[in-house]
Image (cartoon, rainbow, N blue to C red; front, side, top):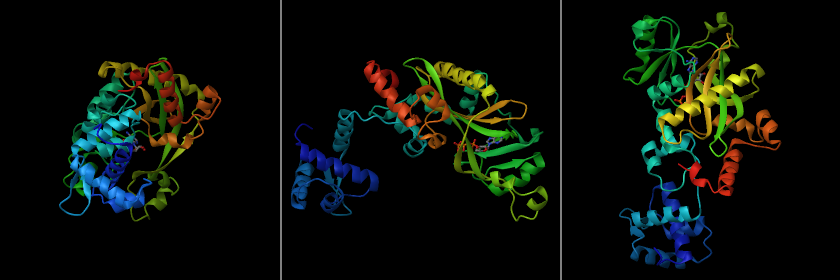
Length: 351
Ligand code: ATP
């Protein structure tokens, strides 16, 4: 690997990045057009021949382009490490790369990768929340037991698509007919209240939990049904509620809830330390429903940054009071990394 000069590494890097994004063999023309290497196409071609001889590239059977070898990919990862790249996990990373691959990452990773397993398994997630003393909606094992309104949620539904409500066994059986072959779902007590997403940040550097903000999801068509009276809903061709997210609305929560909300976050952190070494740190979100009786039901936890932090690019009223400067969740993560470097405790926040 030491046999390459800077320009060859630059060309190899461009080829790898192009290959990663297109999954197709890469030709010298593409590198010349898309990347600013600063040398002639002929030089790029010659360097590609050299890189092939050295075992970093291989010829493709389907086109004139080349593809990187495992040796090249290892070099790439090492180069990223030299450049001190840190992965910041978010929902798409987990969805597209997969938990197994993330756990094998060699490039430094912000947060505790091992906690992700606990948020993605509904049963373990539920146990975690219950042990933290949080109220969770009742689960129904069998349709026979349905004695109140339930929301039927399919796994991996990506934002509530296809979910339906059922009021009893008969109603459930009627509606599940439209989801032939679907076996992976839960029947959860439907909580009537305001869906509130609580965004926290926990720093293990100073053992402090911060509230970053709150948001409410704007979901279609469930949030539009209230605009139509019950009488007129009957006139609509299709009134099945759907929970597909279309946006996020910032919220300032009633002040008297705050001590309880902070306590809930602290309990989640405490319990997470029993699940996996180091527990959960960084941004996380409790997805809740608040009822008129003042109960806060938690129906899900996301152990990483979520989209509901986006309304607060310049910070929320809560971060403003604490920092007196714009503080998005992204910036808070960057600040944490800087603080860890200053305190020589970077390994504490990389997991
Ligand atoms: P995933 O990340 O698994 O796709 P999600 O974050 O989209 O899940 P879900 O649990 O799928 O969240 O819920 C989607 C929406 O359904 C919520 O935003 C909320 O409006 C509604 N919802 C979910 N559970 C309940 C419940 N128990 N009672 C009332 N409404 C619920």
